[in-house]
Length: 176
Image (cartoon, rainbow, N blue to C red; front, side, top):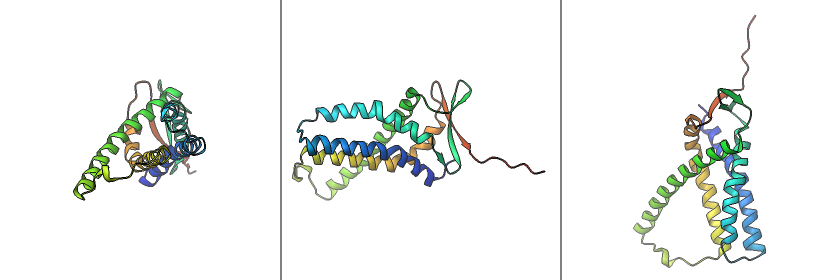
């Protein structure tokens, strides 16, 4: 099993590229162009999920973590890289599982606010730029918090047409 430190590093590799692109998009659309609608945000969400996320997954899983690599096994053969569809399946698995955990955390946070007597209608309304930045920050934070916990399940999962396997990158030394 990959140590927690390396799972966190993998979570970082799965999070930072999309977070940086998301920040650039938000600052361009809402900061520079001052677009007030959320139509382009929705378009970016679809592009981010279907185009950028699979690339991020392929990039992150191609790296070595603590002398361990994640190998793709498809049709009984080792593959050097994930296909687009395989990386999309992995991203979907991580996305929906982290969303469930994030919603549970949001429910607990909301309950704490209610116990503290804070009402959301008392909070000031923010513009599209701050709303988008806040959502992006929360998304990146929840990914960093929950992906290290979800990664072992991702590696154990038997997908329909492939599975992932941890392999040591250390070569065994034979003694004479």
